Length: 372
Image (cartoon, rainbow, N blue to C red):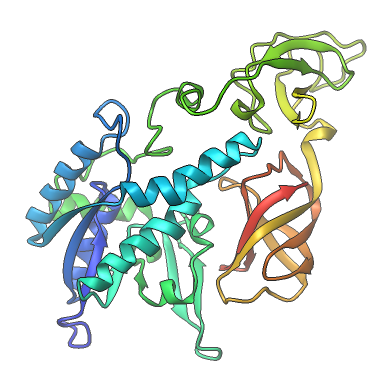
């Protein structure tokens, strides 16, 4: 047993999934005193069909039993509704497309949960995120790094974490690949070793997204127009669409004379612009249409891991999670906003999503895209 860690209490967010279960096991093996916390973040229509927190808690409790650790069920639903869901609705009503996972990490998992863990006398908290934390020996500042599994790295969703939060956080899975985590879970005999990974936003679950939003946001129908100004359909409300969206537009093809490859009647339609003032949804045919390409963006509500903005210059950025790092130049920066210019055009840069900056494997922070 590691004497440095002997007796140090770590509170692990046990979600019922395999990642957090292996996280708890790894920490216990390293000599920590491990306590599990199951966070309930959504109420209302929580049931097994959509947001299955009841089933997930049973799975988390089964894991705690196998590992021989305590588990506590904590309800953060009020904090989630006030700090995450309310902002989620405000953004959609304003025609933007927010990322609630980013806000949930900053406000719930690494704020409400962290505060609760500290009240329990914890030295650290831990989650099953694929990311890493290290303290820079020169600056003494904590750095957020990508997870070593490029297919699972979740630093994008964690970019709003600050020095105080990172100083108390452990990410044991950051050094592992998902295949290794699954293998460990099976070897240990965890009851959820084969459980399917959860996807999407918990409060929406598997239900149709538009049906969910329609409960909270009024529909205001309007015209769908193409890049030639032709009205080719009707939308159900601009809030229900996002830039780059291909499915669910309800429009067929329009044949273009002399259509090049990527155009013509069989080319798919994509949402390209939203005119809030005139309530027009603009769509284009072809993935590579000029309207879907951006070489610059402006981001607001910036958050920097090191507490201050990086110096202007060459960096890399992601404008969406499932995207390779794109070479860019930080032209202007401040603690509240920044401007990026890209070496290559970026596809469907979407207001409300996060632009996250990197220097190699180090995540510097980011902001909310305001315009492209």
